[in-house]
Length: 532
Image (cartoon, rainbow, N blue to C red; front, side):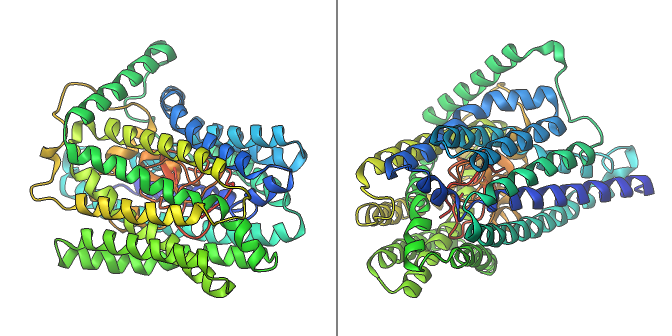
């Protein structure tokens, strides 16, 4: 029997989680339409913009481990607050200064800030809503019911809060951008500052499980975490070859999704005569469209065992053709519809991709292997965006970049689809278990929680996410968000359930933002420089 005090505590945690999550997405999505346009107005050329967004991916990828260790030492509440504070400063920098160097520093600071939140908010909500009912000898069946139905309800409500923040933030940012491209930056900064205060006030409760004491020290914990990731890398590379191929193919999907995500606002601003509200509507409609389509694909997969492969292959093929049409068609309305179809196709691919990957990972190494996958995403996308920036003459020119991205997206989708369903695939096929502990930090908690069971609607929704990334945070990153130059909108959050788009800042390894036309993940977002 659950006491009234426990029920009240769960309700308070739920309200805090929904409020902070919604505000988090609102702040990030304020920038999805204007961020790249603002950088361009400051004098950044196409190569510099691509390089900056690539740097966001790489910074988030390499910072995930040290910031995860710090988050583990400081606690989830403080870690989330630090994330919001850093992002508040990074976002606001672009409002108070017209210097390209200050802008780049602000973008990278926001990206770094996103990694502090990797899965921490979600892990706190899960632990605080589950730990109390699970105490005591008589909690048995009641605890189990509360654990399953309670978490389903928590994540379903969380998805509603995230989508509300996403749509409201996107449209508000577009409206503010019509007055001044820098105005959404300061509003996003103020929103993050408010979220920092709220997180300190609302994220109360029992200490996180297994939190190390200060005496453990940062350096030893950092060495231990790096050692765990290296062990996970070796186990992955020596283990299941199909899993290796899935990781590489998924990284390519993120790369080819990210290329148009850098350019779309510049391209369509010209086509629609500078009407930023149309761009905001593109981003919002794409995200909302994913919701019923994801529900339909999940229903199809329940009825047919091979439906996962069919969904991935069909979505990637349609997405590739849609991007080609968006490039070739000069009629703005038709081109916009085609681009929305492309961004939505990416979102439809990702739940099946994540589920296939999780099925092949041994549970004892899920966090470390997903961290390796997130790092692959960061390096592939970062390196690929730098090369693309060198090949693109003008930021608004799609003649080279988009046909290349369409071909790569289609081929990568076919490759992933061929790997997503294999006879006998499952945890046993993953790397062998060893006594090596899983990665410490909030992200690890999120990833472990986000195993195959989380590949359902809650994790598959339009993030980011970014998730997120990061995300990806492994558990909820905004990776699916957009190509943001912050943290969390299109981050390398490959494990983030709520990420379907690459965020330039975001890997928050857990993700990433929704996969609408506005760009991304992990997972946990930061400043968006562009959203596909």
